Image (cartoon, rainbow, N blue to C red):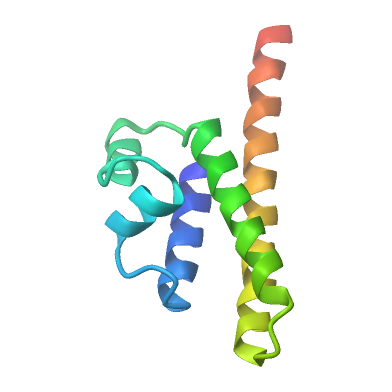
Length: 105
């Protein structure tokens, strides 16, 4: 689920021209190496909580900054960033719940 979330956010940011490449997304939005998404896919593993939390934080920051802009396209970006932030948070909490449920089962 978290890989799918990261891909959806990456694709949305590419569509909004907020990033120019997967490399930029990984390095500047996840604060991970340029090959982070490929590594997750190859190894069939979930994104780290750190990556999801970092991404949600940055999306929230820019959603707040852009929401006060007088330019309508900035406000549109703000709404999309806020939606993507919620998506990241949902993925993060779902991943955390799966983890604690495995331990207590």
